[in-house]
Length: 42
Image (cartoon, rainbow, N blue to C red; front, side, top):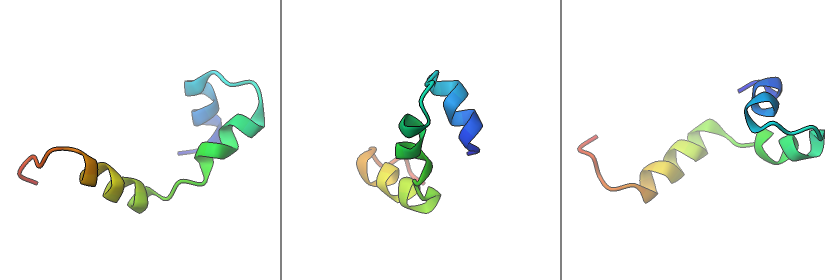
């Protein structure tokens, strides 16, 4: 997601706050999400 979108959605004024989230890899996020939710038959 573009950095500007994250900033707007979170309402942060400081760029450092956004940098924490901006490095997340989408595939890693997907794998972690699926590992922690109940199996939905996917």
